[in-house]
Length: 78
Image (cartoon, rainbow, N blue to C red; front, top):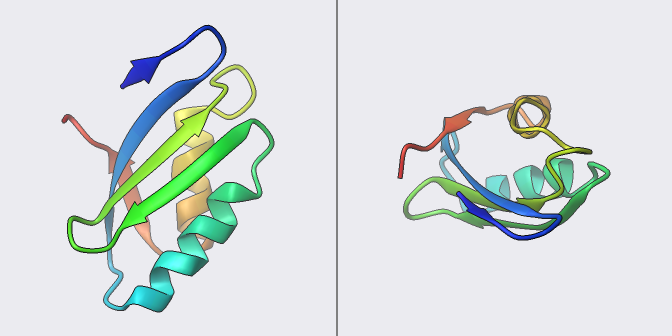
């Protein structure tokens, strides 16, 4: 996790997606959250890297947004 004055970079590990179109679904759902500045889903590694304001969009909010897209995610340890 990387933190600046207002934003934090959180990496989630996602499960259950099997095609590049799933990437767009996750990026769209997470990107809709207020406080999220950017979302990058890395298909090959199943990582979701989110730059967000943690006072507006918490890690739980990010995990819930991935779930709304139909996938499971959890914070990555590295």
